[in-house]
Length: 103
Ligand SMILES: [Zn+2]
Image 1 (cartoon, rainbow, N blue to C red):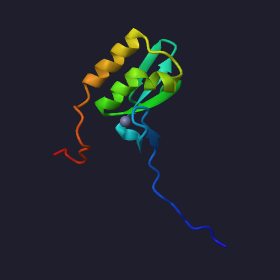
Image 2: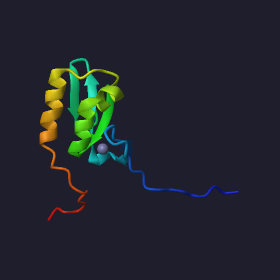
Image 3: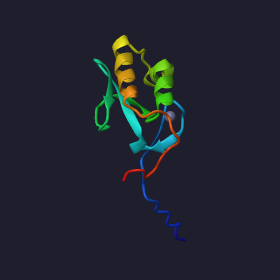
């Protein structure tokens, strides 16, 4: 009468609001809605309603175009867009996921 011991290593996973894929949290960036507007939350510790976008430009584009506003139940202001777009510029161009390319 033992329950099967399904002890799987726990990897926190979240879904990207851009493409809806569920991914390990570390390949996603959290965006939080605060009283002063949206904030990028790389530490994942800011309080507030958050949404995740994964580190792929196409997802950020989709996020900026409406997915984020929808997920956060808010409307993006111009400064929110500027913030998100400048973050997006820092992301690499879309490529096929490259794991373990660090030398
Ligand atoms: Zn995505």
